[in-house]
Image (cartoon, rainbow over all chains, first blue to last red; front, side):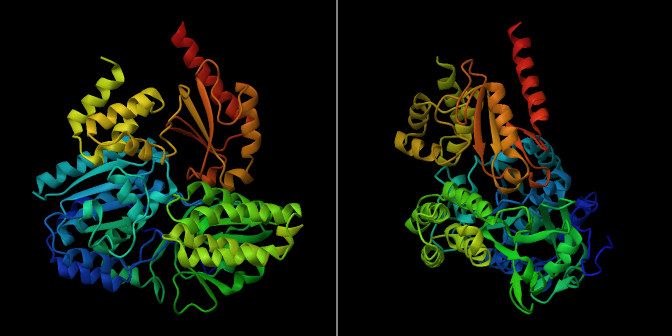
Length: 394
Length: 160
């Protein structure tokens, strides 16, 4: 099969990290405001899925007045179908550490944490060795910044930034109300920058090569590259760094097995796109892209025609029901009722029209749930139920 | 002194008794005992000078903090979508058949506990499972039998 000319493979993230000492010492000689401007002009947006402009986040934290500030690297990668952060931390850990330290330099924070999910505990020893060497170099250049690992203990919701901070404070990982945002009141109520692992690595690229090299890739509103975690019915599952803004059609041409029925973009909390909409869908943040634009943390799961979409939805809902923290009613009860509801329709105990009621329930959850978990259940639920209604009923 | 009590006290002495150290201490106890007993929760509460209910509330939030006795090896098999699609059930049947336990149970000799878990982050090498902190991927019924046989042998060697 010919490689599609539309997909541009790039190799920034996993490329050589041996020059991290040089990058660190050169970057911290520049003025913080210049670095922030560089980051803002790159138009880098957060790679965990939500897509908040990284430069603005760092700027807000830098402007916050406080004795103590913190930098957190969010390595609680729990979205189904995502596994890129694990690969980054095992292959190029020094890029992550360097980026955290530069962020500390810019914002005035002296302490950083990597919140590592319990499932990735096997990375801890190697990562600690890298941190030791990193500290040694910081001492050598008389740069005051320390990093430590905080281990998670198996909770998807702790990937939500404020739940993660609650967890680090020794509490149940229940999301906080926003605002205030972490850049004002974060970990221990102090200004905190929290970034996804991949976002930090992109800042390393930007500080090393300048914003232009990053900005020149991608499309308007979706600049640069992104790591994609490809799994499901594909002959080549794995991790790929691609330019943002690609069409789903081209993606399927490259990664599909010739019989792709649908692609789940962005994990269980993202959207399912059926075959007939592949050509209208592009991967990137909302804006100039015509048709459907799908932001993503990079999870791309392919399903071929042998898969039942009912089973897929059932699996997602069970996931959400278990991972809902239970704090707010729309999410706690909503996830349970959605799962019971589709089972009842499938068994014929409820009429097909009951699906409409369930769709309205997801709308309510989208409007009233406290955090992204409850709000985003509607994404996969509506995109599956609306596109594969017969499979839900028969 | 009870070894868990002294572990809790030593860790509190070393890392401090502020609330940020609660999860790390619970993790250390679970690493030693495989679960967090009521006794441990009360001891931790005493050391931190917080209500035991706070410790219980925090502990029960996290799926890796077991609060009932578990075996020496905790098997966590991923049940999320890609693993489910790629034959997780066949692997699960092979484990249940070999260990003669159902989901959530512990073998009578207290060696193995079988649990399901959500996405482990190995979807490109599904199906996956963890045995304690160790990860195993691209599982088949044959492969999982070999892996478990390996764990059983470790125990036999220790006994002899």
